[in-house]
Length: 469
Image (cartoon, rainbow, N blue to C red; front, side):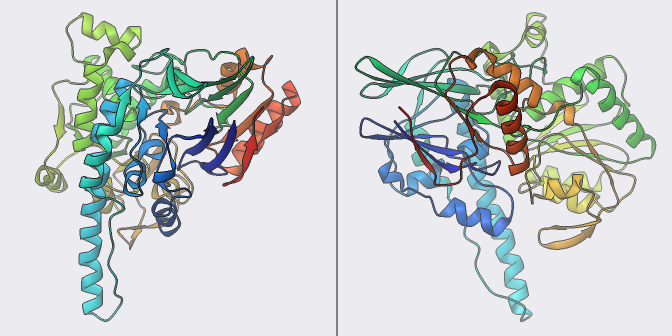
């Protein structure tokens, strides 16, 4: 078995790892790079290996940095199967369509701006979307559902099965096994490991022993604050901002984070701990994704299933309004008085959240509540780093709104939680490859794994290959 790291090597986004076995090439994930616009766009458009050379894809979960470049792979000749859990497939059905739509609309918006600047003699150029809605429609039929704990054959002597990673709905870690005669090689890809005791989802399942592990390291050098007080912190933000007449602007990933926030706001509303102000989920994708959540209660934890037992909707309550239509979204700009708007994207890189930030960042009464990991060079990262001025749609804006982070809702395991998760593998592990982390986070986790457990740990470079035997 040969393993080559192409994406999320020395970085957080763009997950893509190539496994070669029995003459077949299998991609683990095919995600979008996010961060510096020009650099990310170049990487996304120029795949390191053409789709025509790939036999199959196994997808850990639906987040765009893991699934979002599948249509580009199809454009470059891929026509094989894409294996993943049923919930992941249902999410990708909406997420990939939404990503294509946003890219097309953002390209139109930017081209109008470029045309205006060209008319003024400033610059010229044409922005092309990364891929189109037609590319997505050619991608979706390639998905094949594989339930948790169900073996799936990828090549002669190579199969995998998935276990619940507890990160988002349908997320999984992948256990591959290559058997050649009496010799077997066991490789596990963690995907993104979730946290125990988070709202809605079940805790991550324990992994089985393996020889090689590809492990995410997003929070490899950090420890989260306890999530037991997250609902109190959320209530405090709501009350403080409403008291000064401001708006709470929440950039949130349409998958996972939005549903968690709605679930917690439902609880706060029921207990009358927050003001009676309007709450909007302004994202067509989030609306569709929430419906997918409703359709997959098999992924819920006991608390979330309790709502269903009592015939309650955990994702809906009286003052909550879901917005699909763009015109309805624009009307929020003229709404008077405090309100809350939750909108994608979670890293403030595209979509409707950019319009809300453009209209609200310069008002000190408002709060921007960051609820998830922000990759380097994203607008969301600049906000939590307290940049006094940022660019939105290419134009400078002063940041006068209060910027807060709700780290307790992170969907990624921290260092302690990662160490606890890999414990069942320790006796068998021959080598660990750390991916999906900024260099400092990966280095911190590598030092702990080496010093505490004596493990052979590698932080691979993009394009670096390893023979597993």
